[in-house]
Image 1 (tube, one colour):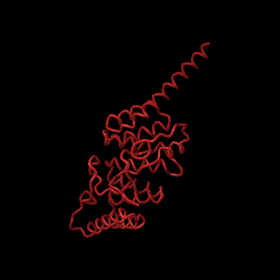
Image 2 (cartoon, helix red, strand yellow):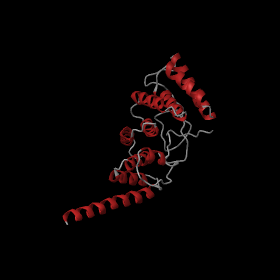
Image 3 (cartoon, helix red, strand yellow):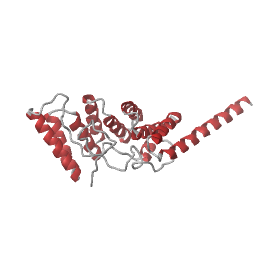
Image 4 (tube, one colour):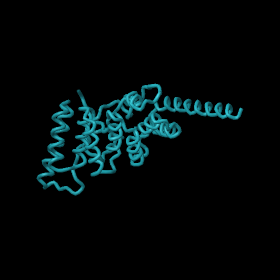
Length: 241
């Protein structure tokens, strides 16, 4: 198992569509088949403020907004955070989870909780992933990645919550309006929940920002909208007749 540097949890579009009982055609899309652009697997955030436009090795420089390097708890929490990331990159998800949990127990911080959510997610512990990402967001509300991952967990959970997924993707989009992955993910959930006009807008934004395969979805959603309009016109004509 290998982990490349990415901050997003990816999902399968056919899974979300099946979970929502939406009769749509599964389509191969960017960054696997849902919830992302580049073909990567999720790894922890070393710095939740790091730019995603240039994937690099990122390490948290602090675990709280006002921490100091002389704080022994701070140093130990950061040590566990870095060790956890090393274990995750080695493929030892359970060991990484234990270290991130230890880091968070020593000093609650957004980075450790974010990464803890990633490990819970990999282990299919979706309720725990949701809890970790929600707490991470409470400490750092401005992280679009945390909101995106939380949306993913709400979709893939045994009891799917597309309404909450949509809510967090809308927040992520407001925080990072030119992010093509977020626009694509938002479009996918909007389409799956039948909000086709809004989905079309987001797919177009995603394409404009660089996701070329969004073009396929633009055509599909446009065809669905046209079909709905034709049917509505036919129904109106029948009722008038």
